[in-house]
Length: 219
Image (cartoon, rainbow, N blue to C red):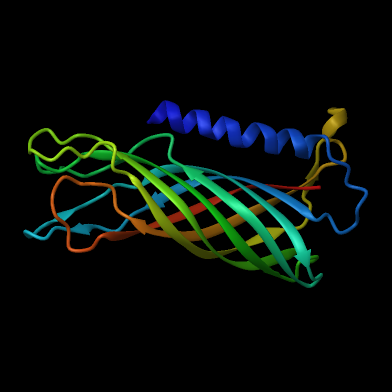
């Protein structure tokens, strides 16, 4: 799954960066945005039907986001899509032998973003959307349940954050000199189905809370 996630990351990032790098910023409204973010995924404990919990450690999260402004200036509405994945698996803390010890994940979610003070120095926003989630759990050390190949599910995404105005412009690289770069900080929750942990759980859904920050490219 790790190789698959890395491959998808490259397939998503390369076209986004290439299109942004070759774009002209002569349009004063700068309708397109690409966020490149990194951070951590925090997943609350999973309650087991037979008693006890699966406690999940935080994991590295890596994402790419594309948005296009549809309407508005000070209060602007954007439509876009999020890609988020973990290059390293989410690991359970001291799992029982019949519990899956770790899993990889991937989220691909179209969304709507409403940005306030959209042309200001600080630009708070709210986001909601939904789409596709995929989990790839590892087989437990013991137990008779096959957890592999059962990881596709839907997800609902909601969250908020803040963007900044242009902070830097790269110099010395001709194709990037006209590309404004700001910053983005965000908290999102991907409320989704669960990976197959190998044992019955109280709920069939879980919260995947993601805290990320990074660069925001406008063109």
